[in-house]
Amino acid sequence: MAAERVEIVEVGPRDGLQNEAVPLPPEARVELIARLVAAGARRIEAVSFVNPARVPQMAGAEEVMAGVERGAGVSYIGLVLNRRGLDRALAAGVDEVNVALPATDGFCVRNQGRTVAEMLDAFDGIAAAAAEAGMPVSATVSTAFGCPFDGETAPERVVEVARRAAAAGAVEVALADTIGVGVPRQVADLVPRVRAVVGGARLRCHFHNTRNTGYANALAALDQGVRVLDASVGGFGGCPFAPGATGNIATEDLVYALERSGAATGVDLAATAATGTWLGERLGTPPTALLGRAGGFPAP
Ligand code: MG
Image 1: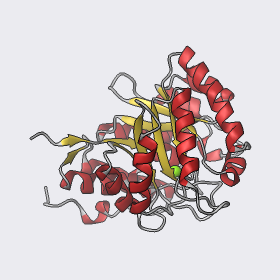
Image 2 (image 1 turned 180 degrees about the vertical axis):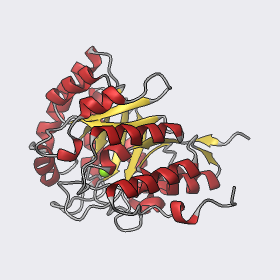
Image 3 (image 1 turned 90 degrees about the horizontal axis):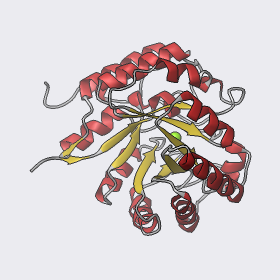
Image 4 (image 1 turned 180 degrees about the horizontal axis):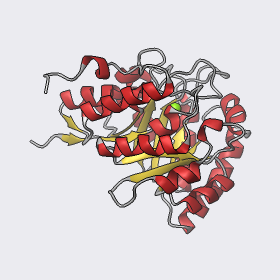
């Protein structure tokens, strides 16, 4: 029996770097992306088109997109939060855009200067303009498992934001544990409820390992039939507008768990782990990923 395919969306160049004290210049981010492509990544959140005054780590998105290799079957995703971001993404030639749609007002106002209701209205316009340009749009429902400002997130809010996103034309809807507070029971509760309202949109999950539940959550999502997972090489990451948020689940550690569980990712474990180690050296911070130190099993 062929192994079941699980798609990893590599978010290291965006979520992985946006909170680092040492900003990586565009040419280093291009090199990071090239290493990830060589290691098998085929969907990469490469850039974000946000205000560089607010997130200096993401400055130079256009230069990054101008530098990445095209035509290798890789889909490059740009994060956008408004129409201006979409226009920049279209001009820069990304393959997809992803829009963050927080489920909670406390985070939405601080992260993107709008309430949830205002952001959903804005998303309608972004999705319509993207559709006109032939650009696929996905939506990431942030703070779906808890909010650093508002506390617990009511599942009904998550379901409603996901429903609105799909109705506006999102081809993929992600549930994101932005600050790493979720547990597998929440995943098992939320995924079927969200699936019931998003029609034909794909489901994706985005976990942070802030409280060591990220990998358990990813495997719980797999159990619920989710076949697209975000991960960040080395386990780098965080959010400048979410105090205490730490890294995403690490690509290499997730790939190890998935492949030993019978899934196929197409991602080379050793090459990804080596990239995590390389990135740690560039950033002056060791990766939180463990596979770079421990290696795979059985030893190749
Ligand atoms: Mg994140």
